[in-house]
Image: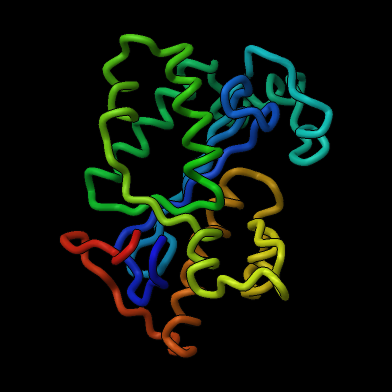
Amino acid sequence: MAHPINRAPELLVGFDTETTGLDVRNERAISYGFCVYRYGQPVETEEFFVVPDRPISDGARRVHGLDVERLNTMRSTHLVLDVAAGARRAIEVLTRYHQAGAYVVGANVVRFDLAMLRHTANDVLEGDDVASNLEDTNFRIIDVIEHDLAIDPSRVFRPRRSLSHLCSHYNVKPGGHDAVGDARAAVEVLLEQIVHNNAGQRELMILPPSQHVRGA
């Protein structure tokens, strides 16, 4: 992210996961969340859950409150999938919105959420045409943490810039460590960052899908 963004893309898709742990090569997502904004307004959300093929770490469970027993009891009220079906559906959602011109928005989204999804797909979707979309598609990405460092690179007064810290700084309701909530919070942080870049002007200038955000 080379430059602060001054115009909001027309179509934004917040993306977040809750996981079994922090090692992107060996852990799994147990929930995927998407929050779609068009012209700066929320228009759609999607969240689904995954019963993992490995244990959920104690640290992760303390953050998001999910364990295998609870995931299994959620089947009557939520979409709960196995690891392969969850990864496939996540890739399908991301690919569909990419083809519509969307930017994927998240916090540490390339190095964590997308990286874990890629490793999972390599493990469980080998030879699947859907999985090849993840490797072959050059998603348009805006990471709100990297964008914030472009706005204010000094780490003296703001040494921590996790999504929760950015929510506090930009007065955005935090997501609460559930995937769809954090996906929503990431997009709203980005919109507030753009307002900040435009000297507080709250009427968002919208970038149509035919153009690209400079530096994104």
